Length: 434
Image (cartoon, rainbow, N blue to C red; front, side):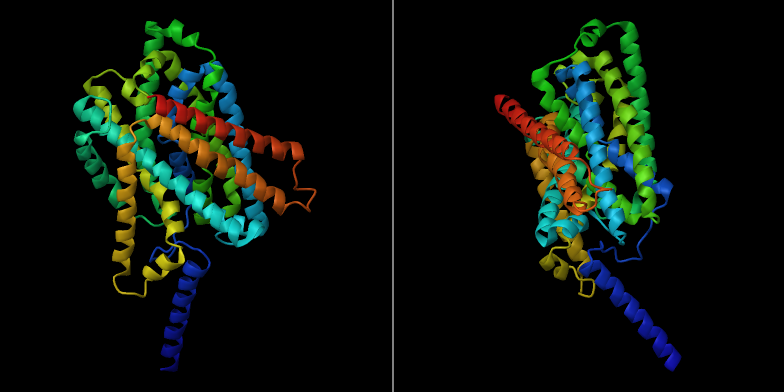
């Protein structure tokens, strides 16, 4: 009997310890044993995080800004974004603690206030990205079923409901490592779409329809804020990157994984965008989403459906980091305590309500590319430029071997703040003028 008692007592202690880790040390609650992602699984999920809706708006930003100027700004922006992720990885590795996420890194350097500020911006940014996906879904269903641009109107309610029927169940997944198979499926669908659009662009270039006009569209300096905002949105994967790093079985390998995936996507974004601008640039005057610039034929519709379903699988990747932060708020934490009755139902109710609010916001915003730009300008500049520099600078202020030069710190800060501010003003002017 004593042995049985000891076994049961040990199990209770382990359960209590796991509960304490979830709610006292900021682990996301899943109700199950944590799933650790392999190197390959984490790579698939990170690729899926990169290649989503951002790459669809990138050709429009290159077209309005001029492709030659856009290449220059895109490469600088993408390099700085990757560098900032490296800085935070360096801080997290130096701490060498389990589940060292973005908010935990901020807490190490700036205390509870830094943690709370980071948490608020992180939640707002990730929910904003989820809204961008819902705007795309509404636009997609409107394009497929009515062959018309999506504008706010009574008819779009049905498209919003259709989007909810698909994304709502997916938003209840709780662990980033569980997205491996879903990400592989989504990547396959998106790859089919990108390959088709690439060959279509080659065909348009060979046909010569508008190629001279598009190739000579080199630079429009007044439009550079659009390029910065969309790049910050498309390459601003820092919150998702840290969520993936936490779930890896070997977090020390994440830096190498991030470099490989990032450089792959850098080439993919640049090649795909240039071909789209040279092949279909002038078509984007009426369509901001490159996927909708294809000819109206059955094959194009099939490709659009494949890509859309691939993006739908990306929706939970965007909302999960935000949900995890929201569910760590003290009052909500107690409300969904797994020891309480109907705790799972309460968590589902909270997430459903948040999804409903996001859907209503997405329904009321018809301009996909401009919303992406303003989101990148505000959230992208804060999370991907400002926070990493301030955290790294403070953490290593007494370590000369790790500390960077003032020129590097202030150069990135100036670029992020000025670029984000210009992008924000630019987008507000464009939205109000329309």
